[in-house]
Image (cartoon, rainbow, N blue to C red; front, side, top):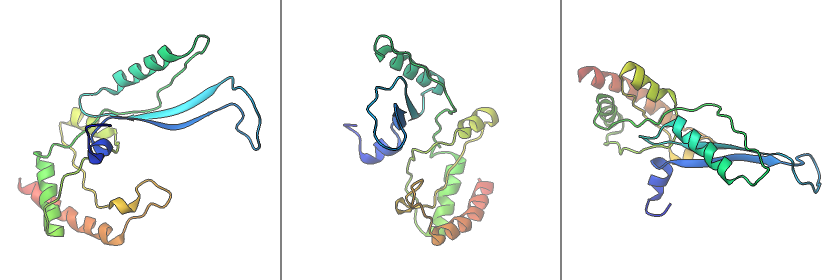
Amino acid sequence: EKGYSTNERTGIRPTLELNGIWGGYTGEGAKTVLPSKAYAKISARLVPNQSSRKITEKLIHYFQSIAPAGVTVKASEHHGGEPYMTPIDSKGYKAAAAAIKDTFGKDPIPVRGGGSIPICSLFEQELGIKIVFMGFGLDSDNLHSPNEKFDLFNFYKGIETIPYFHQHFAAM
């Protein structure tokens, strides 16, 4: 996306992902067929001020609007959640930053991740609490890939950080 850095595109911008597409003959070998049906699975990463319901409705409407005459579009929503972003001026973030500094000896650099944990926005909405995320993995850990890993050093540093977080949070 022009005008945005790689970090912005992968962490804070909305996305639409094509997770899979299939149709026609999908068995072993080759067959030349015109499929009577085709399927796709998509997902989207939302950002603050977007509504999962509204985005779903817009996507379905768009796909229906571009379908050729005689083609029926059916769509079903499997699951979703509202976007959530931890405010860096929140008590939880400040406690986490102090705890990470205690453990690693350096101030953390806030990074927005593009992951999804749908219950976070619900916790804020229903319980009135802010959620804070503390990540201890590295880019080289290849999160969610076939060769995903997590170094024991970072695992133990994460364990070491949690009591500091509790201390700082309780003191605020």
